[in-house]
Image 1 (cartoon, rainbow, N blue to C red):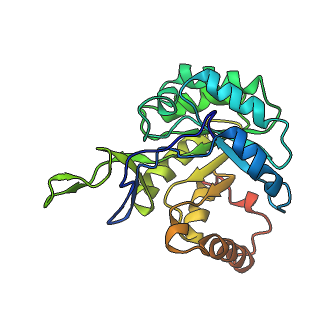
Image 2: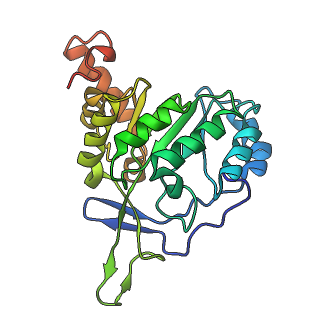
Length: 255
């Protein structure tokens, strides 16, 4: 969600790589006012919590979106996107510095009582420095990581595969990077970490949990297998039964 509707980036926006996907969607969305009016009533009927991801070009835009969604029935939490690499300005600009990331987190914290998740970027020098600053500024949880910047080129047509020179790389290719950063962050902060990046199978999810993640996000895998989330849950349940694990807390962060 953004304060006003965003049209997103020029097509093409998706290019499949050898081990993942490059995307340059540009956070296309209908805007917060329309989402609250048309989508939230549906969300309120669902049996699962709905987490809204918010973005903006300025701190004031983030603040206003958070303020608007705070009282809305059907919204359980806010994920603050300070890590999208596919925008000309905003989002990633706030996520590459501990100072700006902390300032934005603190500002959003003042206008909402909802649980606040901050989604961090891997395109930084020291993600732990940023994570600790955000945690100290009022975040309830961290999501680690967003996509890595990448480029694909069509050698026959001599042009970029995407509508922009670079996009965000997701999928199995980034899993080792994501796992490493989750491990570092989870052992540096006292708030939950949501692991994200290249999770396709139940074993992937368990790796992130053993590295310290409290929960995981699955994105790219759902493009190729809409049932991937169900398969991952089923696989974890089978694992804990077979290995006599009473609770995932027994193996969380053991490495």
